[in-house]
Image (cartoon, rainbow, N blue to C red):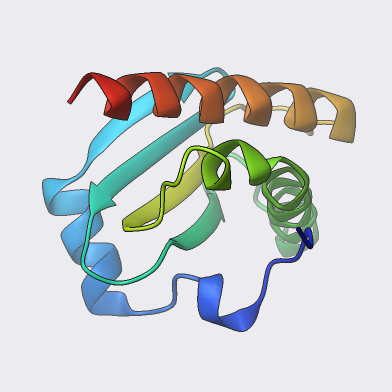
Length: 121
């Protein structure tokens, strides 16, 4: 399995994002929060960092880059459990600049919680 984050995996549709936040459920592992919604298409993932918490665009871009990398390295947790038809948005809700180790560790916890939560349904 290749650990990539291709164009077809990225959540870009404004309509899908609005629907995700209107109807989606969430799971948290501070400082990360993930909003998810079951859909008919393949797995789509987006990342976000708040402008309120990170005023400089450079900082927001760095946080989003770390989030994407954390997801890319740990997405095997989702694919191993055959989770294909979901829309996900990973949000960084902390106020301080994270390092990669924290993001990587919390992404594992977050995806494991997500697996547990959808396996109950």
